[in-house]
Length: 365
Image 1 (cartoon, rainbow, N blue to C red):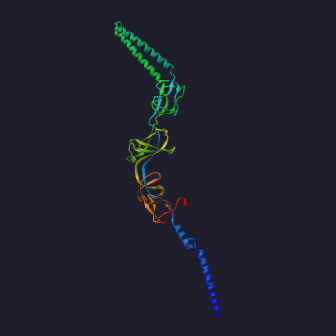
Image 2: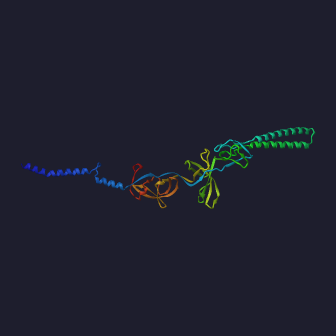
Image 3: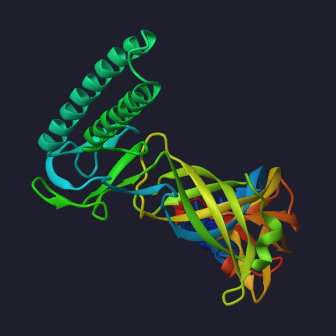
């Protein structure tokens, strides 16, 4: 009976402890996450991540880059020829229109030539008679039947007839107005039936096999260029790029503008360009094949200083750059970063030196 009483007393004492243990166990389980961490631990981790600045990165690399002088100008041609007729007359035929391609010697138009052809035939007949008369008198001269004076006069008439025939034939050829150069017909000024004189402009021809642009280069850039130097030509109409080269550099500086005229030759064998097109010109002044390159979008501009951030041991480190060549999207770095460095390209404007960072991709944002 004593033992039974003791067991009842122990049960009464242990029951509250068992209930307390179960309560504590349930409370702890309720505060544990799947990884075995408590809610307070997760909150601490989330708080740490929130303090890290999200950034996107890229590796600093090496590659070729060129330096340029940028100018704008208009494409034109040096060989522009106004075509005139050497004789007066009515236009009988037009053989070409504006936009047609011609070769030197091609007939562009024909004048009415009926009267000129008659004159040519008359001159041919006169020459034939003069040749016969001279031959007859020459034969008589050998027989001593005519004087030397009569023979000389016949010879003179023969030469005059030949000159008349040649002049008449030249007049016939001049009724055919021919192209003096190969190229394209830029303009036609007359139509069929028009009366023209020697002062009447008929056509404008352009030799567009090699176009040019005359650029105004600032005097301070003069030492950076030379004849035959490469020029990149970017057309505003199509964004196509063609290669040109410096053909001439004027020896004279314009005192009013402080510029020098530079003539750029633009070969155009495929006839893709048109005189009058506006274009941008990039004169290549130097090229480096193994330059340390970074994208311009990674740079933070602080007054006149260029700053980037690289990642070292999970922290952003501020670097001051020394710039070399640059193009539209990239710059060459002479000092400040090295090939292989991890460069911040997005998020750098939120950084300060030694800040912690969290690397993300574009999809994460």
